[in-house]
Image (cartoon, rainbow over the protein chains, first blue to last red):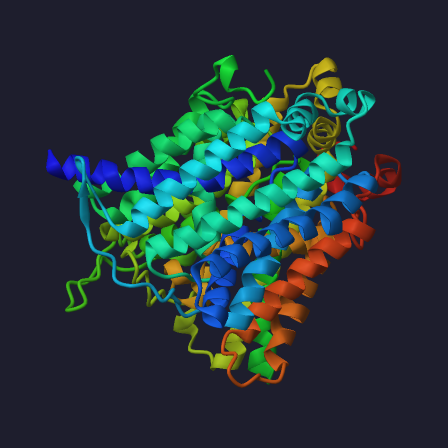
Length: 293
Length: 327
């Protein structure tokens, strides 16, 4: 029983990281309708940027801030420099998939070129476990859970109660109608990309902190977990994605406690494939989880 | 130098077969398929286990299934049958309800699952160590290495030529035309009584069989095959080769493969080594290929040799009449 509860506790931490990464992916997809195969590499960029920030200033806020800024910058470059010109030229959707794949490869191999393929890690004090209720967490886990909760609540408040959030929901529901109602659609799309990159960058630095080390292919490998959460929750439905992330995170860690942890990611793949075959529009299809009401 | 050129030519020839396989799926049927490289890998593994002798009980604990010690031709045929059957299963499931992005995600994840299964089940294909010591066909002739390399290049070129002629014939056939019409407008094609699902599935299986052939040739040439020999990244390189050469155009695809794998892939070996950057080669090579993909997609999406239209094809269709029915 303790094993189960502890693994659920680790699952919640994994779920928090998956939730950050996949909700950002899902939100960006719902507003811009461009699937981003470079999303995993935004996480990697965030992780390495935080490492650089920590090396230069040795302060945690600066490290986190550099992850957020770097992730955001990558997302803006991808959108303004690549996706928008392609859309203006009337490129096919499949071409744009490949452009995001290629952009991801450029980021991933750029990092490989500059930082090398050896695993690197942050300079953190060795975490010790504390008992929190039935769970066992380190201060790092608690920090990840708390900040993920804050970010997701802020995102929810933005989407529900601000003018900008309302505009985002309008663009996601119907871009041309939104434009006709006087919403500056290109600006909303740009800001959504920046937001997506910022959250992804942060998710990358907490992922690397939680794993203990980072490599240039870290985010690329994590992409399938992000896809799994997003597809289970219904692609382009950020609230459903949140529940998908919870399911994936807990399933991965609980399975790791009972079977070989090498199969951890294959559990995520298996859930993904079942979800794709049974309910490609998302397991959680209730209307309340749609971004637009 | 001659040996080196022969080795590059052989690899480029084999990769051209892979590109042609993916071209049937991506170029003609418009399927965003990442699974093709997993099929190459499966083809290689299957060829390995049916041509190798039974697993020896040595101190390394090597183990794999079958070990039938069959000759080259039988190995190739079995590899192609197995990859066709796997394509049929994956395609039958995935093509029924998944489109575009979902199909891409499904096939992308399937590759990773296959990789995990092969690593986690060492009794199947010897896990992380992989298969090794695959016998070269016709080695009993006792040729010297260079002549043998030339002979093997000849075998690969023969395979490529056969695949090319078959696909060129298919391209101009009613089946090829139907497939491309489904790609361009599925509703219209269905309105004319075509079944998009079964036509796509046929294309998927044809692509799978060709990928299996390429896999068998690849393991025969390399003599070893393990998890280190293949990764999902390779699929992207194949995509780049197709897009550069001309999506849908068989000749263009071969030219694209020569440029991507031959010129860029081999050319990056001659860059000066930067001290302190051990991974510079591999990284720069992928970056160059990614930039090339974006540039071609942006400014020449049809590629070097665009896909021919039917009206250009009447003459060429006549030329392929000797293959079968009147065109």
